[in-house]
Length: 589
Image (cartoon, rainbow, N blue to C red; front, side, top):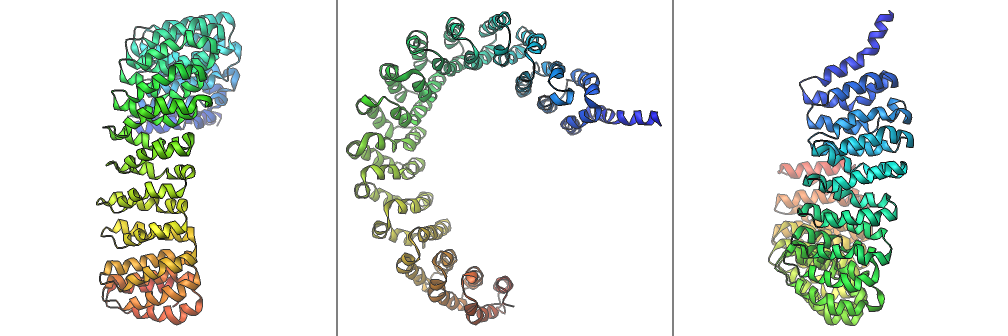
C-alpha cells in the first residue's frame, strides 16, 4: 500500500515528463502552462531537486514552449520555498536567456528582473551577480544582449566593489563587436544611468553615451538619443551644456532619418529635461530644422509635437518665438506634399489658438485652418473639424461661422459619400458648440437633406444624428423643426424615403416622449401599414414594436393591435413574420 502511495505522488511528474516529451507541441505547451499545478503537487523540496533540474536539462524546444516556460518561472518563487530558495530558479532562466529567439530571451530577462527583487542582498552577490557576469562574458551575442537588461536591477543592492565590476562589464558591452549587443546596451543606458551615483553618471555614462551616439549603426544611435533624454533629466543644469547638448545637437542633424525621427519623437521630453535657456538657444533652431526635414516621417513626428513644444516654451518670450520661428514652418507644412505630415499637423494645430490668443488666431491661424478644411485628404479635414471647439473658445462663434462654416457646408455636400459621412458624425459636436439658433439658421437644412441621400449609410447616419440632436436640443425643438419635416417624407414617391421616415420615428420616439409620439408619429406609422411596398409594411410592424413601449396601453389596444393583426394576415411572408413578432413582444396576443 505504501508503495502504491509513493507511486501516486510520482504520478504528476511522470505525466509531465511524458507530455513534455510528446511529439505534439500543443501537449508540451499545455503541460508547461500547468507547471505551477505540478509544482504544488510535488511540494517545494521535490520541485527544487527534481522538477527544476529536469526543466534545465530539457531546454531544446519550440520557441512557444520556451516562451511559456520563461513566463511561468518568473512566478515560481513561492513554489520553490520562498525568497531564501529563489536562487534555484536561476539555472533554467539563465539557459533561456541565451537562446536564439528574441522573444524568449526577453521574457527570461523579464522573469529574472522580477525574481531579482526577491533575492536578499547576500544572495544577490552570491548567486545573481555571477549569473549576470557569466551572461555578460558569454561567447554568443545572445547571452550578452540579455545581460544588458539585468545590470540596473542588481546594481543598487550590492557592495561598492561589485558595483565597480558591474560598471566595468557594462562599459565593455557598450563597445562590443556585435551591433545587436551595442543596441541592447544603448537601450538600457538611460535605465542604468538612473541607478548610478551622479559622479559615475558624469565619469562613465557620458562617455558611453557619446560613443554610442556616434556609433556606425543608426539603430544604435537612435537608441542612444532616447538614453540622452533620460541622462539629461539626471544632470544639474550647468553640466547639460557641456556634457549632453553637443551630442544631442549632432543627433538632430544625423545623416540617418531614423535618428532624426527619434529626436523629433522625444522632443517634448527633451525640452522638459533641458529647461528654458537651452530650449531658447538650442532647441528652437533644431525644431525648425526638423519641421523642414527632407524626410516626411521626420516632419510628421515633429509636426505632432508643435502644440506641446509651444505650450512648454518659457512664457516671457513664447509668443515672439512662435510667431517668428515656428509659425513660418507650420505654414509651409499646411501645403506639404505628404498627407501623413498634414494629418499630424491638423491634429494639433488648433491647439495653437489658445496659446496665441484671438487676434493672432484670426489673422494667422484661420487661413491655415481653412486651407486644411479644404485639403483633399479626408483625415486632415476630420482632424480640423474634431478640434473646432478650442478655436471657438478663443475667437467666438460669429467669427468662426463667417470663416469656417462655408467650408464645412461644402464638405457636407461633397461628392464622396465617406466625406459626407464624416461630417455627419461631427454634426452633434458642432451643434453643441454652435448653439440652437445658429444651428437652425445654418445647418438644419443640411441635416434634413442627408435623410434623402442616395447612399444608405448616409441616411442611416443622418437618422442617428437626428436622435443625438434631439437629445441635445430637447423635445420641443424636435416638435417644431424636425418632426414635421420627417413626417412629410411619409408621402414621398420613393419607397426608400418612406422607409427613412420609419427609421427616424424609431430613433426619435424615445427622445421625443409619449405625447409627441402618440399625437404626431403614430398616425403616420399606422397609415403607412397600407403601403403598396412590402418592405415598407414590414418596417411598419418593426416600428410599432419599437415605439410600443413609449405608447400608453389604450393606444396600444385600440390603435396598434388592429393594425398588427391585419399585417399578421398579409400575403407577404416577411410582413407576417414581423407583425407576429411585434404582437408577441408587445404582449398584444
